[in-house]
Length: 322
Image (cartoon, rainbow, N blue to C red; front, top):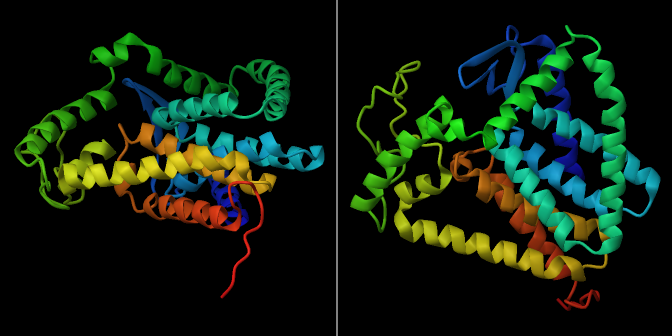
């Protein structure tokens, strides 16, 4: 976990530097562009989507779990500072799907932890609210502040999630995905069991969404990760993936409370909730087939299984003979 967190902090720091530079000078791989939400352009607000988004998301939710179980206040404060840096980095991705999924995962965390952990989370929430209550009025006092414009852009983008006009044709990003989904469902119905294979165009050319960029044809790409698996490997492959996900999450939610080590307990629960985030966000992101997500998912599953093997259900150290 320390290595993953270290990488996430480096990515977050690099994203902070990229945000200060804007999109005119790109120092990070991936997408670095001006924010556009429902046709409204924010020229001075840079949207940053580096490959390291995967470790940012996982580290963010896992640190939240660590803070819930961390009994030493100084250590908890250090984690809170790191948590705030990661939160700022996730903010400038402007990924509404992950924002929403993280809120769901946080609510689940509040619901399942014991009262002492819930009190710690509430304590950190009060610190965050108090800090925000002091900082934001100061920022809003400067109408030309770039941070002020970032907060406004973030709020306006997030509110589109609960705005009915988003789902009635006003959001170009969602419209694009709906067109993709319609083509994909038609192809899945025609090839339900084993799919059409990886890298095969699943739809005809559609002038509403298609454009050739640097010689690349995107008719094999779809944002919906669930439909992507069905297209590539059919219902057989999708059922296997969902079965693996169910088993992973079931074991995580079943065993996390029995782990006596607080840090390992937080890691197991954090990885389990991270997978919940992935499953939710995959409805509008091709998470399952992205190269920067696949190894992270495998790592989470592997680490959780190692922790389970270290302790039995009563939290006693297993005795092994070789």
